[in-house]
Image 1: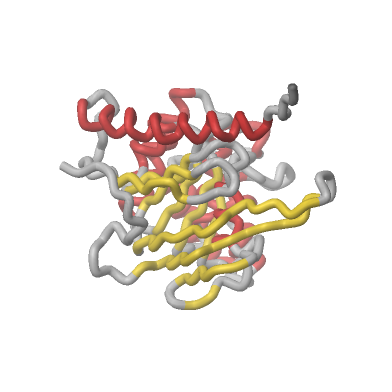
Image 2: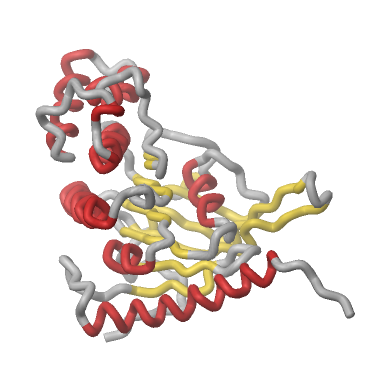
Length: 279
């Protein structure tokens, strides 16, 4: 069984990609150093409809920058990025973003947080209430509708954040280290919950993480990025059935390969931060 691929191609041969990215570049001017900084340099990838793509890379390699460009929060400096054949020009309801920090409104209860986007879009009250109820139940929070964020555990707050995004029925789910702040047991439960949601609704997911096991456990493919300027060093296909056994020989073969790829780039990134020595 082949587990790796150097080709940044659609995981489903012949399928029309949901996201098409060609030679994507992002640079900006850094006032502190008085120079241009290249964050992303020539990103190429096709992401299929309902694919779960995970992204690993050293800190500062441009993972979040790439996600923000797909979300429409930032504009690329060059290249092409298309969603369903159309250029991404800004944020839209077809893309939902889940952040590490939950980003919940502390003055709203669970129901108020989940229905916020529907209210802003002018969805009628009856429909809004029903959609909100369904989504709260889908993430396992029935009975907590009137609780406020400070009354919830970290895992429960992240479930609310996920429900608030999903209730708007986005085509694309963009997740920036959403489970990083959770303890190990809660993180495992949230990974399983996310896969349940993904299996049921079959959305396209782009998921950023620093955790190698998490990336392999969740992803159809795992992207390993280089140190800055960020490029896609290798796209690793995870051809393992779900639910995945993290103790299996096949899983750990992929883990070792991805670890080797990532460790080399982390060392390069560390070297870039060290001051130059002169004789």
